[in-house]
Image (cartoon, rainbow, N blue to C red):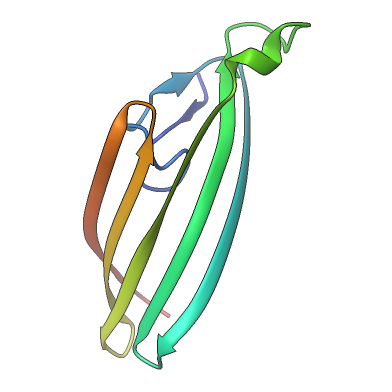
Length: 101
C-alpha cells in the first residue's frame, strides 16, 4: 500500500506512519541560500491515507507537520543535511548526506 511519513513525505512523522489504498500529500517549502555552501529550507506538510476511497468524512483524517533543514555543501556534489520536523506525535530529527549533482 502507498505510505507517507519519514524523511521526504509528512516529515514530522515516522516512516510509513500513514498507509492506505489512497494517499494525499501537499508540501509547501521555502529555500534560501544563507551562503553559497549553506542552504536553509522551511516546510509544512499536509496529508493523510485512507483504506478505501476518500469519503465524506475524510478531511478529519488529514494531519499536518512542519519544520526545516540545513544543507551544507562539504565538497562538489556532496551535501550534509540536518532536518528537524515536528507533529502532534513529537519531534523527529534526521541527519544524512546526499551525493550527486
